[in-house]
Length: 163
Image (cartoon, rainbow, N blue to C red; front, side):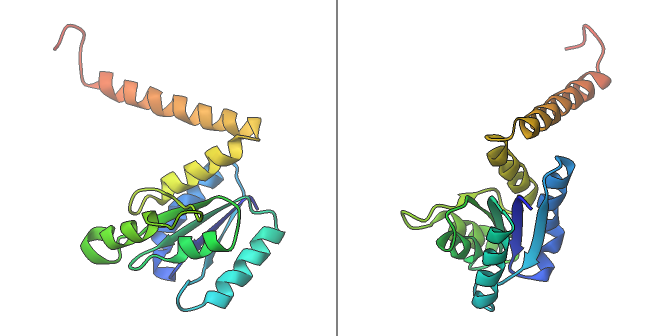
């Protein structure tokens, strides 16, 4: 396993599963776990220890409300941590976003958009691709495919000479 994906509640699976799907599409092994920084801190530490022993290189942590899971994970590992603020709380996830991005100096957490788990998976893959040329090639192919799809959609409804 290269990436460990944690979420504060099983109700977060619909969003956090997007990170797993993005990684799986790129051939990156990952695992998911439900572990709450507030309700089960000892379990979070246990999950982190097991993941570290299994070779996890990047952690993704999604939580809503107070959203302390990513910070809790970052406090217990030197591996990169990507926070995914979830929209389960106030004002569409603004509380979770602010909780995730306002980490104290010395304990960094990268942060993606509210409910941006797919991008968290892609960012984790990009981090891993720094030392994995084959993964980098898969990411480059994915980008080319996206660009081709945009170009195809752009020209599908237009004809030459039309402004």
